[in-house]
Length: 396
Ligand SMILES: Nc1ncnc2c1ncn2[C@@H]1O[C@H](COP(=O)(O)OP(=O)(O)O)[C@@H](O)[C@H]1O
Ligand SMILES: [Mg+2]
Image 1 (tube, protein in one colour):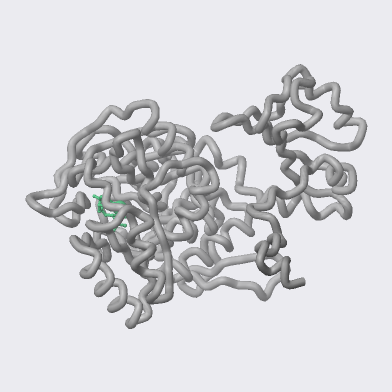
Image 2 (cartoon, helix red, strand yellow):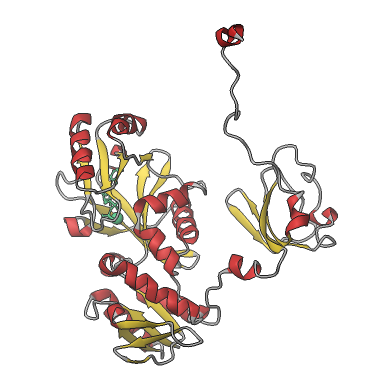
């Protein structure tokens, strides 16, 4: 495999380890500076130039995109995707992970537990937001901080309000998050590669610091993850569209609370803490996937007029519940079931003998008109028109 590692830090531990691991396995690895690409949209086919020259052929890229270059960096990754070059982390996955708010918005739809969080803009909404996540002490976070910078613990509501108002006045958006005190300055970093956690460590903040980032003086120790933590980490990475990710979790009273998903996790801390060859695992994973460049499935499946993708949910009372998939005449109606989501498990290409249960979700491809009748009405959160209060009715 010919691999390009996109990085601005050719000398960093992670980049060096990744290229060495690739070379050891008989691949060629080039470290290319993300900022030295030029995106070429003039020709018929999407192309890229590097340092003013035509780019050589690569089978795969591994983006290591720092915060400072995320707009340009993700544009370069997106261009590789258009050129059908495999990348474990897509441009959209990288941008979704970069923004802490966007990340938790996406994760919250998929039953991933996270610390209660609020996002507000108006001054009048600040205090209720602090109360809604559990009151002081409360954590305030800049949306795009890393390495613990931009994460503040405010001991009292008044202090929190003052900090948030100050940041708002300088046009900084912030998250308001419950301080998970029971984690006691510790967190868990899981390195996800593909569908598994390849290494994990616990980070412990030093002294009276509550942030456990290594850059804030935190110490690290190897950790064997419980199944619940492993599953939360893998699912969070999958949902974000990242095949290589560092998932940060707090140890809450009831299990893992996902804080963030990093798309370019550093390897030094975790390799040194665990003695595991994480770089090698990443390279092996990429080599096994080179033949399957990312395809925007929804977009590709929507180009046939009248056909598309839909999710059919088995709401309570749906007539299909208790019946076999094969007895629903789906295939006769030109509908193919791609996956069946049941709780947190996914059954790919479900067979016809599978019996439907309440809350099952069928991801289908087919004729939109045929599928329309199977999609239940959208649930309303509240009645659209409220009844008049009795005194107003009397006036009529
Ligand atoms: N809600 C919270 N409760 C307790 N500790 C937290 C909370 N949020 C963050 N921390 C601590 O602060 C560190 C940095 O927060 P994080 O959201 O991961 O930002 P960064 O991107 O800067 O690493 C975490 O590793 C954790 O130790
Ligand atoms: Mg972090």
